[in-house]
Image 1: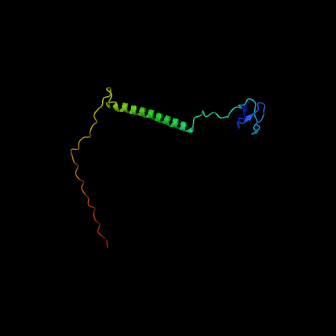
Image 2: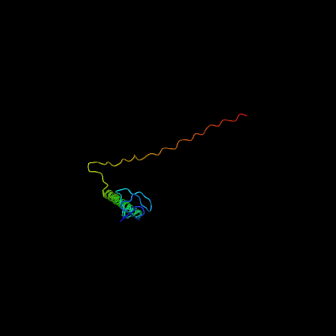
Image 3: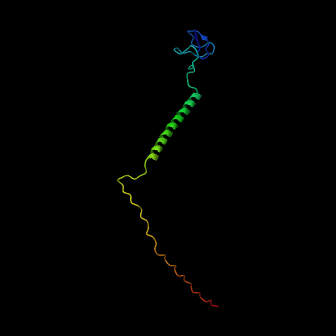
Length: 114
């Protein structure tokens, strides 16, 4: 026997509306059992867990890539290429003579006019 998609109560095969809840029944619509998807969707908790796991996996991969690049850079020798000739830096010439102190000039005093 057919049942109403809204209230799940039995209805006749040729009824155009449910006698109990008065919902209109269109031809070709499902008329057996509830209209829900049957609980086959993912819950919010499962979606959050999957998202967190994806973020952790992504950060882990990026961290490993960064560590690998750092290890390669730190293992590289720090020498100049063979084709580049490096010259030693020139030092300034040493000071051989210490200049004498300048003479101190005493300003002349002007006598007071009284």
